[in-house]
Image (cartoon, rainbow, N blue to C red; front, side, top):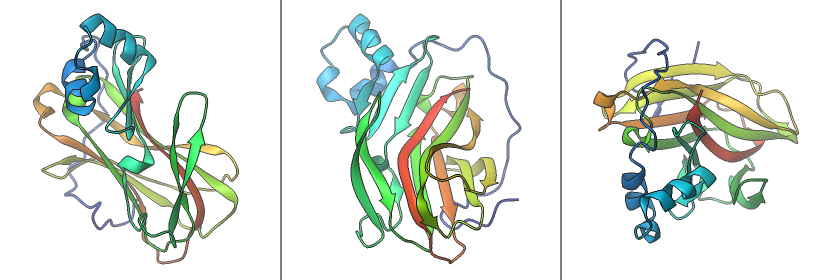
Length: 223
């Protein structure tokens, strides 16, 4: 069972796992997403925008990435600079490192030492393709010298503003030296949820000092 959360503690009103439907709209709210998050793409035609989102485009001053999969379903990555990471503004606890892989370049968050771990992100429900089952994954790595990870880490998905819990689980981080896909949970955005916001949380409040975590971001993609 998961630990008690502080700021990651909405009222528990868990949903059962929902099945993905075949009538999901393609390129859902593409224009709205780009109008809101990336002003310099406004003059492109719809066809040009579709080509762009198949390749993937950066949003919100490169704090997010938006793309569609082969079925035209929306996918997102929230980079660390766009997340709320407790103590990340203090270089005694967190530092930032330029990172580049096969598909992205961004600033990774590198944990030096904290006793109170809390990483939060959010995304509008209206950005997600309705009636599609999504999986939310933290991309992180424990360095070889990492320490203090004796207790399981808590993951939770919740819906704002009512605070309903969509998914809650724990996982003990043990593998070191390789990038991990840490599943925070699964959720489905229904059409009547479009005014809501998905809140994503990773936390550990055990009080012992933790070191050596490297964070690449949060991926939100159809399962």
